[in-house]
Length: 118
Image (cartoon, rainbow, N blue to C red; front, top):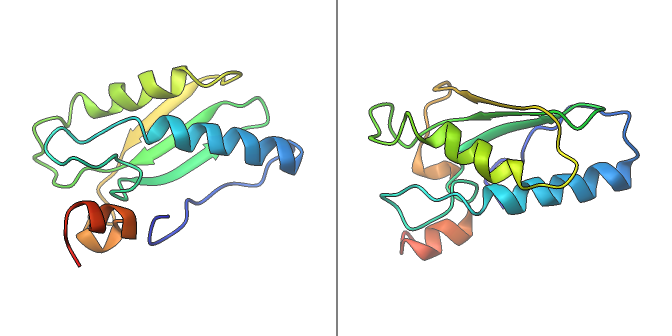
């Protein structure tokens, strides 16, 4: 799990349905990898927030390991494409944010182990 859990907004969806849908979203996000680092963007801590509306529209706030990352233009589309495969998903919005700046402290223990950072 990330150092800080994803921030989720309140929803009118039943809690069980929202939890199951959220698990599907996370699974999809775990299929997106930073091309320069062999760890998925979720475990890297690049996903700051996922909001799910009552209609299952999804808004993701994400960042990059560095603002000048060579895949900056491609990463939001990679995230959008991964999420499009989630059954029942509505509109998808991916926002690139740089506040707070990403640091290695945001990586999960799994990511740190993968990168031998312990």
